[in-house]
Image (tube, rainbow, N blue to C red):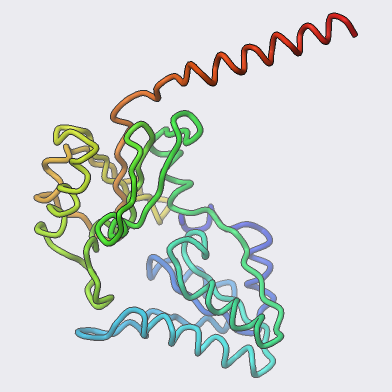
Length: 257
């Protein structure tokens, strides 16, 4: 996610040993830095179109240009910002196609925006639990939300888009999201808007608003929404009693062993 500091030695080795490197990165500066590691770095950004071009068309084109080089017998490395398998269709698809055609393909894990989020916001997902959704999933499907755990919503700036052609949706769409979330959260509940740093000179961007303010708050597609738990987990007394009985039985067996 952050230039230089988040690249593992193994990932660097794959880049340096490749015949051709494709890149879909978060920043033009990061792309220039990648070019210092390899003489043949090909940006995937120009495949994004303007107007009515669907992003899915772009993503399929990415798979196509990468597989062209693979089929030509070249060792191909594709570099995506963050973890290449998180909210990224093309890396999974190109690996599937390559393997289906008999080529060896591998995904090297990376540090994602999720990892940065835990560190920057001081969240331990193991404390109360953590649920992650692409924001539009809550609108398109009937998904039960657990308000006693952290809720992390990705791509809120695009919430409600069904066209794959837009790079943002407006306040009316975020209002629909708020209407859905208000079934489980009070409107004065805290909503954290987060974007991690992509350059070493940057700091993470963190804004705190209420759920009520979300529609009138500008949110980009790169930002993530975090809702802290609205309530503490409730004790399951019946199961606790059952476990206590098992502990007692175990202690009795240990005493007579």
